[in-house]
Image 1 (cartoon, rainbow, N blue to C red):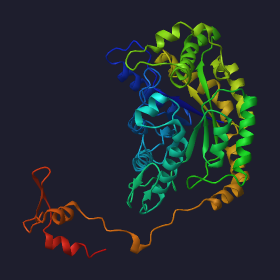
Image 2: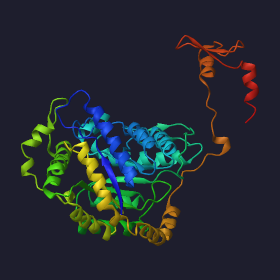
Image 3: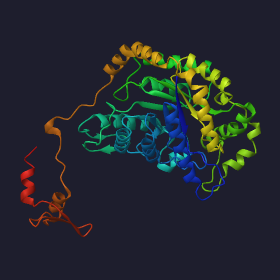
Length: 437
């Protein structure tokens, strides 16, 4: 079973000058350490307006920094909000391809819809629209990364003319696609779209096995029709994690942070009422934290032996990856780093044992089903050469609109919106170059 780290960039109040800077700096150090220790993945979310719970509103910037401070760890844009209201599909394609290029082909493409009204309404999205928005955004982004040029689109949620989106990613046809899942129905939907399931729900290994088996049954069935241009048949689960030789110290270091993670999800997505810039989640959490029960997701908070046994239960039922939440609540940076090192020494070897063989057998087993699924995917027709339009430059359009000569033989283009001049070839010289194509 592979292992990864999960980042929300949680920052409970009170906030001080420098708190956010330290938050991001600490996270980079943790990921750099995890890379050296042999962790397989790191994932970072995209959220907006979720004070204290997630200050990760521009993950593409943070992940760019990660790419330059690590060597082998897979870099998960997990998730990139996929509605065109959040992120135009062309911008997603550009950002993912750039991340893939600067990381040497290590990008993973996590997709999702968001689950909080404070985010959705902030970007003009109604809950009943979000699934259709997700599908339109993901499908079009995948096409943009694989087509030259992208033919254009007039859809329900965005419109775009013919353009060639650059750059293109290292991984062909595009980075592996994943989908955020919180319940059984969304896991099965991920399988129908032939994407990996990022299961952001906490269940015991026995329940995870049920979901895993149903997921792979669909991957092997005619229901599986890829939304992208590849099949990413993987299921990942989520656990809180803190490891220490002393059981009592482990709970002191990690349990409250994990409880706060659950409390803040409930606040923004289920029960809470929020006054932007005023509500103090950490203070509210203190009043009820002792009443909160431990969940299955806290099983990786403990001594190395118990954590190893707990995680082997998930590995034995075929979960492909376990992702760990450590940076949550008031968990301390030094405790997180100590836990990473102890985990790598005492727990990880058992999880990595026979992993290469497991992956090889799985790929052999799934190969005919992957081929069949890709054959079922409907393709977006490529444009014929005669249908690729000529896109006119601003000077041509302005000349036609105003009757003025903005591309004079003097060799400059006067921009009326800026009052400046840009050096360029003369009209006559430029005309010669257009015949090269």
